[in-house]
Amino acid sequence: GAVVSQHPSRVICKSGTSVKIECRSLDFQATTMFWYRQFPKQSLMLMATSNEGSKATYEQGVEKDKFLINHASLTLSTLTVTSAHPEDSSFYICSARAGAGNQPQHFGDGTRLSIL
Amino acid sequence: RKEVEQDPGPFNVPEGATVAFNCTYSNSASQSFFWYRQDCRKEPKLLMSVYSSGNEDGRFTAQLNRASQYISLLIRDSKLSDSATYLCVVNNDGGSQGNLIFGKGTKLSVKP
Image 1 (cartoon, chains in turn orange, red):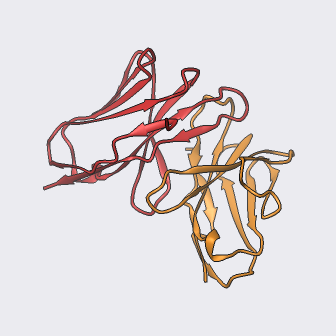
Image 2 (spheres, chains in turn cyan, orange; image 1 turned 45 degrees about the horizontal axis):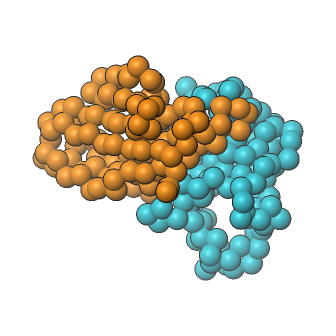
């Protein structure tokens, strides 16, 4: 149980392109979904938290106009990296949680984004 | 002081060895604790939650010391497949957001 699917797993594109990443909870309803970013040899850093039907809450230093998050249903959240640049190249991982804040989060497979 | 600190390792151990990882956290109000494992270039996977009374799952035992703000993970009878990075994770907010704070991880390499 608790399967989270993330798509695509790998993206390589030119600078200036916008990239959309989908995160789906396949066998449970995710009241909250999270988006993380991980640079090489660094820890996962939370970018934003989204609750279904609400605006996402962004962490300090994360530009909401650059990283657009939509959480339209209890099973789908999307992250769009707008006008991506090489410094946005990273491993982006979503997670989903059903229920209260003390429950574990379940992670998607991650998306490796490379901007040329 | 970093919110969650771990020894990065690597820990290089032979198969069958017992190995222990430690982790400290800075926020005394932290509410829940987890160990995740992350394989190279993969997403983190939940290994186990950590409870105040200590808990065991097969070869894995987790301990929590709230007074010292210290968490540990013990792996007995190490297998080659245990090779991974082990992430100590703390939840600072028991409310709706549930903000997880990740340590950088401790790398384990189990050799034949």
